[in-house]
Length: 93
View 1 (cartoon, rainbow, N blue to C red):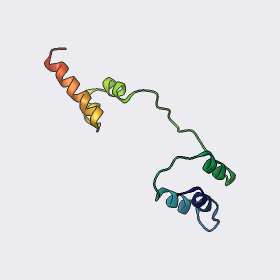
View 2 (cartoon, helix red, strand yellow):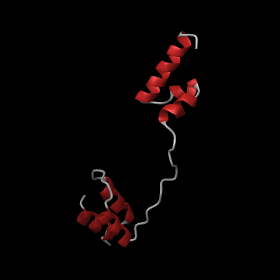
View 3 (cartoon, rainbow, N blue to C red):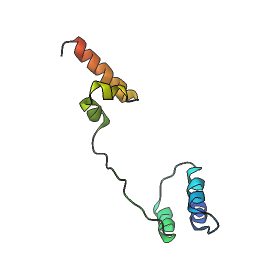
């Protein structure tokens, strides 16, 4: 979606808020440039920071988890942590 399409989607009075969000979600993700931000702000869009700031590394977070909790995690880093723990148990550490 280019800046003109975003402006039209945001300001079209015939569309409900739900339709605008659905129209925007149907497109590829994009970075909000200063130009697009200005259009969105002019249309009344409010930017809010994410509710939770992530300051830790996933590897460190997984390392602090118990085995049961770690077993529920998906992904390559979780797999690596499971292998590390298994190797540590086998080596007696």
